[in-house]
Amino acid sequence: MSLIFTAPGTDARENLALDEFFLNALPPGQILLYFYINRPSVIIGRNQNPFLECDVSRMKRDGVILARRVSGGGAVYHDEGNLNYSFLAHESVYDELRQTKMILDALKKLGLEAEVTGRNDICLDGLKISGNAFAKRGSNRMRHGTLLVDADLSVFSNYLTPSPLKLEAKGIKSVRSRVGNLKEKAPDITLCGLKEAIVREFEAVYGKAEDVSLFAGHEDEVSELIKKHFSEEWLYGQTPAYDAQLEARLSWGLARLCFKVKEGRITDFGLFTDSLDTEIAVRIQNMLKGRPFGRDSIVSALNEGDENARELARALSEMAF
Image 1 (cartoon, rainbow, N blue to C red):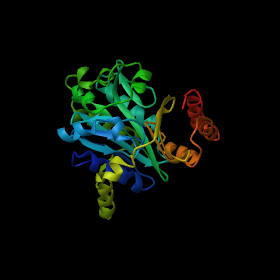
Image 2: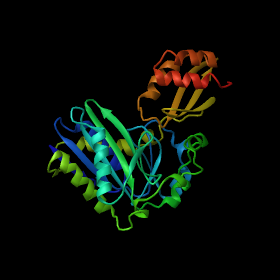
Image 3: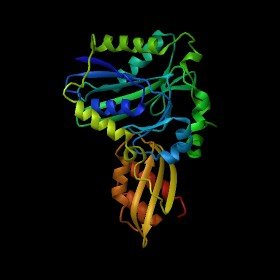
Image 4: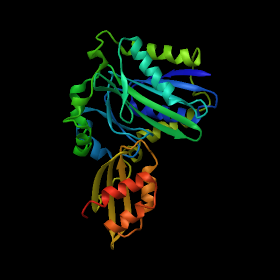
């Protein structure tokens, strides 16, 4: 069964709480296309440190919302010029290639020839117009993203503060220089028109979709998730002062390693990353906590892990610390 749901409000924290609810609760055999629009917000990935990714003080002054999603990836700015979407389904029917094709085909029907680039971007004439991220919960899978239709691109650099390493790796000089609005290429496009085009492609694949509310009987669960997404613990996480920090740009993303050290051993460790792998921070923390703080010890521990950990080990082996 194919379903469509459109968020009634524009608070990013509430809309991402609903995203997580759907990921938790969607029954087998159903696929959901969820749309939402956020008023001015910065959305950070599951394993990012907000103080490193955005200007928190300026956001508070200007009334820009901070929200954190359950998926990985990097920080993004949203406003009423973005159309946000989520595809959610049981793993047996979840198909990222098919979902991507729906977005590309919808754009093509509107006269826009876009293409997939990099890890998770959709670009039009060299400019990024969409980014995507991914999450799983049990047997359910989610792919969500945003489409820049008529966003205020002039304010991106006011609130987003990406590492120079990230910009250097992408060969760009600023946040603003690499993104573009669909309206620049199609002046008559609207968020409503784009949404309708995506729905047509969705129904062409999965059949006529029902507009339904999935909340019946789950009001308490939704309420608890909304409380979570508004909580300082979820938004800011554990961000204590660390004794040492290292940074590396890797094939799987930017990695900021933060160490708390006592008597020569790592007593606490944080990995802040825009990796699409939401579990990588926990895996690496488990490898390093309690180890002696030193290059050889850390590299040795990481070399016992998976390929992503070994890539990090290779990068750290070339650093002096």
